Image 1: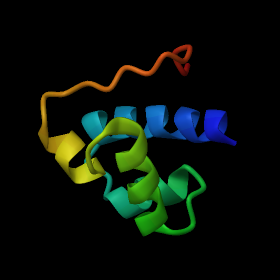
Image 2 (image 1 turned 180 degrees about the horizontal axis):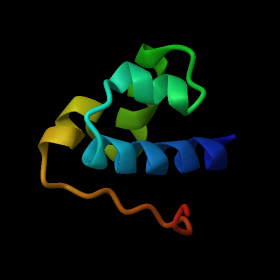
Image 3 (image 1 turned 30 degrees about the vertical axis):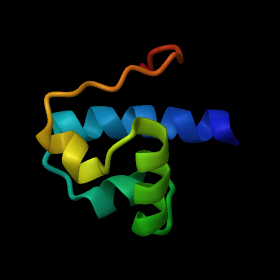
Length: 68
């Protein structure tokens, strides 16, 4: 389950940096029914909230293979 969450968070990072989608829309797109749960998992994985990540120059680099 943790692996799948990391894949989802990796995709979320891409969407946060490359689109203007709302965080709640990204959460739903990635099969998180609760945007608050998505934000908690995102912060736990990346180290900052989705909003802060979008506004920062930081690029999270997971150790997973790139998503195509």
